[in-house]
Length: 332
Image (cartoon, rainbow, N blue to C red; front, top):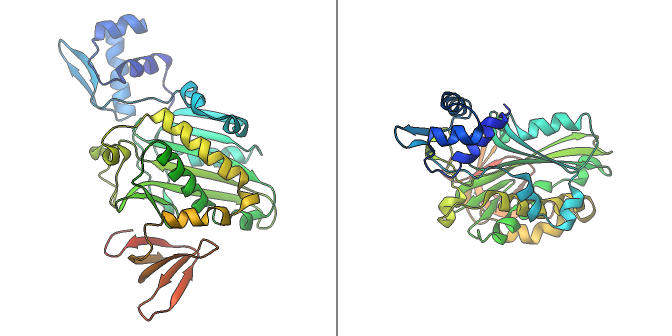
């Protein structure tokens, strides 16, 4: 869905979470009060927004939002990030930022395609799960990049390096109580704050393209999170205040883009020590889900290839290249 100019203007006026009279909205937008009412009903239904209508007061978003603003994101970018972005798109509502860029890379060999969305109707998590993506609440962004050299092997462990870039950006914004859970979760106090989904296509030994998707909870309403089956948190809960969304988006790009651009040359080894400092699973009893199998053990960290080390009850340490880990007794 693409919002009309009038709908966008109404939503921008309501974004502060204060009451705005229908008369004033109609005057500013240049339409009738009845048209304002119709637009607000459409916004409420199509974007699943809670908009209160009170006689004598007007209309109010029950939760304020900071809408994406390309100029504000761009103002946060450093010079290198600006050179690494070939195109930056913002969508009001999209099925999935990853799916959109995967399709786009079939027709374009450009690197540095960046896609933000206010809302995803079919956000993608790992293993086919839905990524809950309400309008204006969080960060949903994907980046497409071409890796021309060593194929899949050249970007092995990329998700761990991406995790480091996200941690760096969060700490730059004074969000320090965060860690990493192998292979691609951002955590805080045992709860999931965000996730990484990388989709790769191309040759095993030749060039390949990757779409790196990131979902990060900024202010996730409880009523939108009822279908989430694992413990979750958001930045507002961690810090006690709602972060500036566009500023954080710019900071994320400043850290993500150089890591992605340099990964073929630098490799995972450049990030492993830092990743291990933020490993929130090491030393913990955990369950590893691989296909239909569930394997219990103590997490011993990751090896130099970024693979999981799991110590079994008999004292042996096994290495795993894939799987999903949960703290023992918790759902994955």
